[in-house]
Length: 393
Image (tube, rainbow, N blue to C red):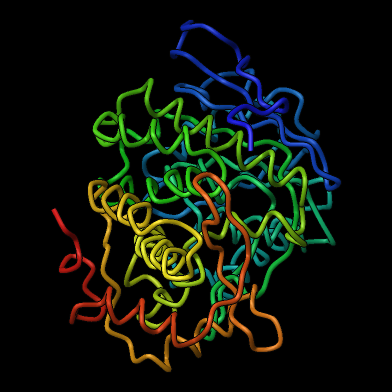
């Protein structure tokens, strides 16, 4: 596919005026059209919040860690647009993307007497965005919400495309809805306070766009990985913008994952099995996806879709980023059991996003024996539940 998309724009606003260079990406889906605004200093910019649905009440959904750093700034920025601004906090961690956190948001909305014009703001990473989005999709059958992602992973992936969900003990993101935000505000300044482990985990979702859509972008990531790890503003702006351009193009063509959108789950079938098998929160989502991409790349090579050298290229990049490249030592049948719960499975048949050629991917089945062989080769006796032992530096 093309390395440039007609739906992508770099005009929010252009140049290096106050706060640094900025960009805008449009997302057009049957569920609605909205803008992804990218750049430093956006949270404090009045332009970020103009033109949103009018609402007397605004509710910020966050977690204690993010709220302590960014909560008051967001509340002050949106206060001129609402009669009342309140907030509700959910616990921090993937293991809390559950019914209890969703119920906490409902309790707050009902307790404050919020109506169907209330505007929700999701301030945080993927967990906050997914739970707040599901609350918005279901409270009074739908209220508008704005994504304000504060992690790299959320800025390049989970905040874009309208997937909202909570986890079930048997599988990740099994209970949810497609519900598009009114806007996404990616303030790159929030990445300055991101722990390094979270930054590295977010890079996994940046890397995935290369093998599935744009091999030129993969080469750019390889060349600029050190700059990304050093949080250089220009590198981060390009990485977030290009990732959002690709996701916007894919989601615009297939909002509800009936076809092409499935390619965005490259590495996720293996990755979700790792998360569920070890217990949600043991590995970060990006860590599991990074390892999952290594497994999926080698499976693609074993099936003759790409050369072994291409799988090794992906593995080297994942390792350079500081992500795990060896799978946890779960029993083989446990792997298969978990992956059969994956949403892409059909009639008990596990299906994987596999690379068919550099920059192109498709959803395909694979024989269980081949899958287990790849897992065995890429486990090497790793200790379950300890990603630190799996990093190759």
